[in-house]
Image (cartoon, rainbow, N blue to C red; front, top):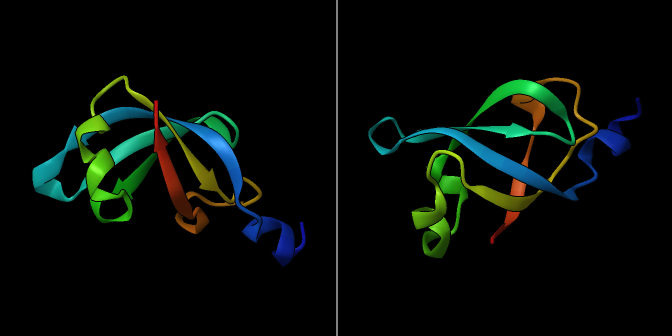
Length: 82
């Protein structure tokens, strides 16, 4: 896959699997990437007005580079709450 295709951000569903504010991270699944992979995401990448939505089972949308090959290469931006 080309480097360019791994950086294209697409609007996709993101589901919160676990949330621990004290750790600074929450875990999500991105069905449009690898539906079985648990991905750690820092709270700092979510806008302040959406932090209350970071709860187990909640769904949000974000722009994600779903062409990435590894979880550590995923980038999240433009978060939207339901």
